Image 1: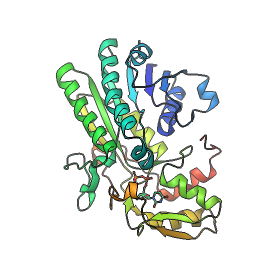
Image 2: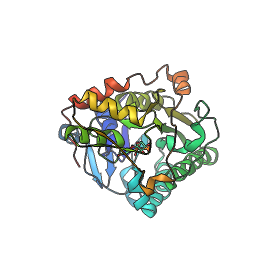
Image 3: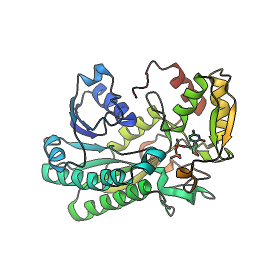
Image 4: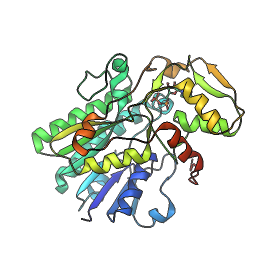
Length: 312
Ligand code: UDP
């Protein structure tokens, strides 16, 4: 059934893929985005949505724009390790004030369900020696991860106090066409394309669990049907790879002449660098029968062959 859906951050990397999917499924989509780093919605999809350059910190705008909607995807965020470190106030305000405004808008406008973009950063160093399910103790270190965790708890309270239902999705290093160089994969791909050194921070032994965007959106769609109470779900590929191996894979797949250069982690990152990050999608699988299954090599090839150009 066609719905009217409000998407914050809909012009960003994950948001724009989400909007595309919602439009393809015949929904009416209202997007609010401040276009801080460009608009990643393709022109054809853009013509089919209602777009507003609006900030989630603006309560009146959120209240007005979400009127008549059945559901909210709250995906607006300041992100990228370096950007967050340089903009701590904006990061926190966007998270905390943004969430307050979104919940207020939902409650005022009778919108019953929210999906919120959280982060695997919440696990911090707790992924070192255990399977990362949603029930393990979290260990958020950065202001970004702390704010995301705060919002998850806030959403749980909104359900208890007001009956507002939600799912927070904890994304594990999502990648795909249209992502910009704040994140490691597009950065390495660009370095490889230009045959410049691939800048691996530290020993490169730190691991990440890279999840392809199409799998991510599929998981979000399936979970949307299951929003009940206030729940948290990992969206992870369940395969970890070291950053050094990632660099080598990217050089090989792009037939690049780039050497791999090991650099000291920039000071902004050093204190927060997580040695190991990988997640379990068992809970997601349990409720939807789906798990992200696109392997890293397959996903990287999709990115390499995508006509989508970076917008920023
Ligand atoms: N990284 C790197 N070189 C770069 C950028 C990132 O080695 O030019 C590493 C970074 O230290 C981290 C991983 O790649 O271990 C993922 O970084 P990203 O900023 O994409 O996301 P994070 O997982 O740190 O939030």
